Image 1 (cartoon, rainbow, N blue to C red):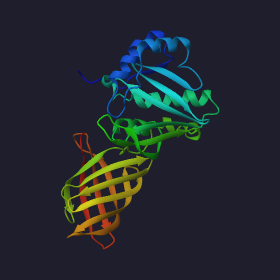
Image 2: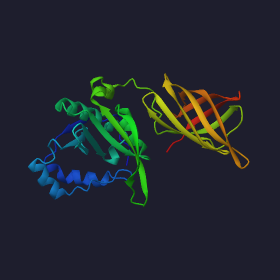
Image 3: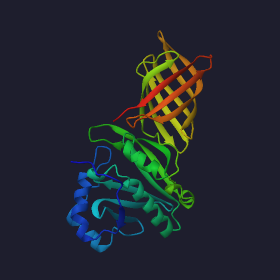
Image 4: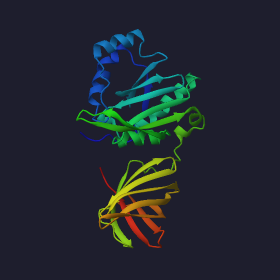
Length: 294
């Protein structure tokens, strides 16, 4: 199937009983190992929509239309006196068009304006569901928690989830509608392409998490089993501090220091990071890291 072209025109409306069949089908087809179905039954859903049980103070559903056609749905469920949680399902064929970000923006505008008691609009994403993490990030939601072992996986075992929230004060400042956001590195993985200066680190892999300008990355490589860096991203430049362990025989030694990474686009559209670092012992180097396609 061909990829959808261009950004979609997003429209939200209250679903009615006649929407039950496609909503139940969308629930099943939009499900992944990282976002399981809600288990909607078309017949029961039609009855509940007709009775208005999906349009209450505690639970509100929205049909998502892209370019005039049904493309998914969103559910906002009240959790306590001040919080409401968003669950979003978009059909696979309609993903990658910016719809998720726009849906979250519209939900925030409606629910904060309609309910003066609502202080936080929240959501969760599986720790490996990078597309949904990036949707939250693009819509101004702050990553504020990691819930360990909260996700029961069909394949067995448990996984963690990242928790996101957009507060009323965020909404009042139009944080959710800012298109002047910093470069989005969240969820991206970079691999070492070139060591231009300094000791080589074959196999270096760097994985980013980002919350606004604050950026955290975890990395590892041969003889470097674990490392973290944290810094501030501004104008496409990440200024950071790092701390990692280095294998030395049978022992681990600690190294720390700081550096600057400049982000730029390659001819093929991928990001590359030009990294200049210096450690506490005065060693320094320059490396080029290239975004890895998933």
